[in-house]
Length: 319
Image 1 (cartoon, helix red, strand yellow):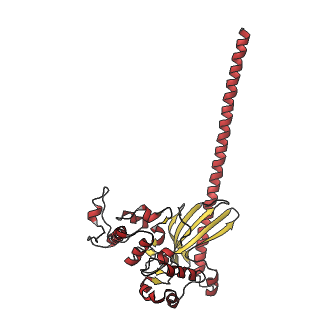
Image 2 (tube, one colour):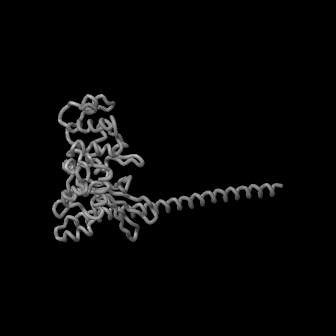
Image 3 (tube, rainbow, N blue to C red):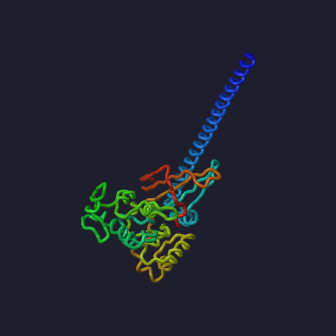
């Protein structure tokens, strides 16, 4: 009896040891798989980052090509990338990148643009009625140099009554994100939400113009022009898909008798500031690593005035 009992205890101990060993082996195996997956994800993430950075550099090369004085204009017209947000893709051994260039002259400069352009853009993005009046009046009050508020606007009295009080700036915006301080401006309005596009991708501080470049303006910005109809905007987009607009006469032909009323808000001048957005993608991926840069040309060179890596890009097809 004693021998059988001892053998039973030994068997139980052996089973416990085997169970513990199995748990240790399984835990070690899981840890190895987790580390391998993390290593693979890190490697893939870095590859996508490098692809996106390559896309930024390619975009800058294309900008310099457009501005080169040593290349015949006919050749540039035929081969140069567009600056209106058209998306270009490039396949590479490690994956691919997509990139788009937007000349800042095709956006609404919130410091320089006419109030009607600012109002038209916000309306084109879906804000209407008293909400629209509040945003526009408050934006203009924020920039002006007095403390008298418009009908739907706001000055120090309003901002100092907030839980975290501050004063109206009464000067130009220094960053686009500064707009979040303005009465009526919400995250959904500025950044977008779902299918609703945000104001941020259509405004700039780097144009310095009260008008917009008809060759670079996305559809939403074209619709911001007083008197511009959807049919007119689509006609402009269709026309410039094959060639850029070079003359006032071309604009007149596209807009007809409405041109005179719209002419103060339109030009064909390409500025020296560009937004370049790129996303690196591994094969089979629908989303990857995105980078955004704003560059300013200075003769034959350029400088970055904004660079964000990584960046969240909500919609790739602006138009």
